[in-house]
Length: 160
Image (cartoon, rainbow, N blue to C red; front, side, top):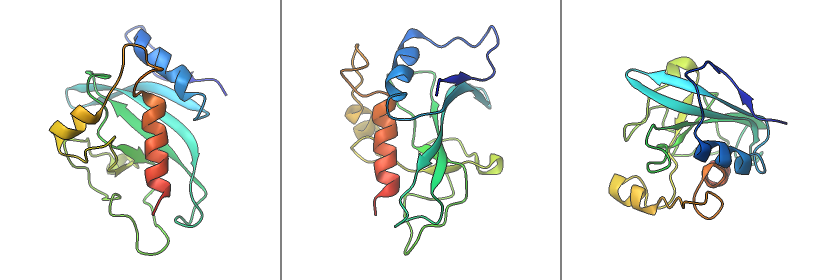
């Protein structure tokens, strides 16, 4: 399915980098919706991937929507975690990365039905280590990108 754009007013233009990364993401995550999300005085590019499959060994539902809020500095700075669109209930002990709160400066969106999941690309969430572990390249296909984020999040969310 093609990428859909919401809030596509004249002031909403995707830069070339994000457009290129969306094409890469489309290979691993279908039904992508892109828009703008304003939170306080910060404007994010919102990338929503609909119906990401969930592990039946871990979850009581088969899929979830996953949301990434790309900061204005993206790709220099990656998003802080991701969001799932339901208050999860995992099978068994649960997952300590599902906090129902947001940390490390991630926006709190639970009141809007989005629940934060603590996931990053290496280095944990010590911001200095995390930013240094994020490795985008001039060519989006050669370094970390939206597909890398999606695959990492999907793996972390579905793994015990």
